[in-house]
Amino acid sequence: MTVRVRFAPSPTGYLHIGATRSGLYNYLFAKKMGGKFLLRIEDTDLARSTDESTRSILEGLEWLGLEYDEEIVFQSNNAEKHRAATHRLLENDKAYRDFTPKEQTSDKNIKQTIAERARQNQGEKNMRDNPYRDLSKAESDARAEAGEPFAIRLKVPEIGRTSFEDSVYGLQERDYKEIEDLVLLRSDGHPLYNLAVVCDDIEMRITNVIRGQDHLTNTHKQILIYEALGAEVPKFAHLPLILAPGGKKLSKRIHGEIVSMTTYRDAGFVAAAFRNFLALLGWSAGEEREIYSLDELIEKFSLEGVHRNPAIFNYQENNPRHWTDDKALWMNAEYIRTMPFEELLPLVKAELKSAKLWRDEYEDDDKTWFETTIDLIRQRFFTLKDFSRQGRAYFSEDFDFDTAAIEKNLKKFPDLQTWLPELAERFEPMEDFSHDRIEEVVKQFTEEKNTKLGVIMNGARALLTGVAVGPSMLAVFETLGKEKSMLRLKSQIAWNQ
RNA sequence: GGCGCAUUCGUCUAGUGGUUAGGACGUAAGAUUCUCAAUCUUGAAACACGGGUUCAAUUCCCGUAUGCGCUACCA
Image (tube, rainbow, N blue to C red; front, side, top):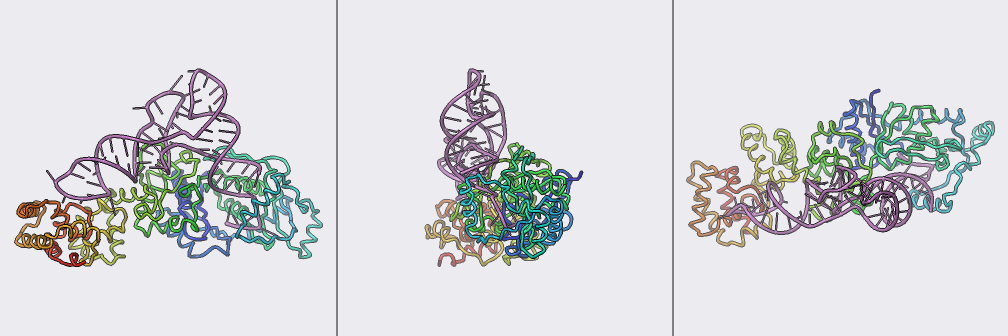
């Protein structure tokens, strides 16, 4: 049988990194097994679902290269089928109408309310004590006919247990007496989550359900629905959650943009790097290795390699250098400096374009210069943004000077204010402005001034690139060329800041 | 409260009934006589706790603690 899996996010807000990782694992598993990766948008919570969120989910998947097979399924389109399934269960006495008036609950403190109610029950509650559970069919029909509102609940059997073998967590069992007669259809006819999920998974012929661990206990209820419906139960695999530092839940309200996929795309992450990082957060191939291409991930992936303990997404608030997980940052830098050049170029081009630094000559007359320069500066960049920020001086005359760099490398040596323009004059007559020739000139100049090479080089770096770190200055002079080098060495702009 | 799941360096993780408990990120120190967040070298850093079982437990069992999840006419 062909493996069919699905990624089923709710479009309530942006695409969360935890959800994204579930999507990734579903994708890897599908490809590994030669199966299909389907997408279902669970938009049954009309109040919270937005089209914008659906778009961000699609964009996120596209960015990561997780292409889905077949048409997207929108769960809200299937409500009629969910209702039909419920009424079938009602006919077969697998469900019953509950005429208990609906309780008004505010979303606000719902968790506490539930916990409080449970505490009062002391866990002794009989889950089968609903007075309408054994109402005669005649009376139930009559009351419904009379227009009395009702919810429809699953009639969980009195004795027995559900049991399934989770591909990650192993054997799971639960006694029926611990499972309430869950509501399938609200009194307003709205199908509820557990019902909708099961119906859709049956209809989509899902063979493996791979999702977050927060659904591990829901699975028992869903199995009951599968059985009541007489459908085959798929194989389940639950994934450990991704938590915030301190082991708390990673949520938008508390942790903000850090949990959103768009943050990483917009911050200049290379999709392949982030995908690689995400794959390793909760799974390992059991080898001492960090970098995997998408094909390699597919080849190595297995549900057995998924961990059971939650992973912490480690970052430091208010620390720009560690604004997100260090390993993600490192991996991005690693990709930028080692990925195939022809794969990097389009990404750099897009970044320069959005920063209005792109010129078409970079693909034409200045192609060689452009590629040499990118290769030179990518060695110490962390994100694609660095090409337009730290690297701005390579593409524009309009760049800023870093204050610390100016203080430390320029103003600390006042002589440089006359020396550097003087050095520019030494460049003037040079016919061959290449690495070795420049070195000769600069070295001789340094000796004449009886100073250290570092003073000249660091000062020149601050003036030519605006920052204190970067490639070897000889390479910078060469790549910027004689004219620009001279111009910037003579410029007094930085001195006047 | 009940039920469930988990627990190896700060973080991601490898691993085993007898190991100097391995790697990566981060971090510290040194090198690179032009910088550095690059590169190279070196270092510090972990089996949650308490009982068992065993010649031997980080590894198996039980308990405790801690964290997380579920316990909705939310998803």
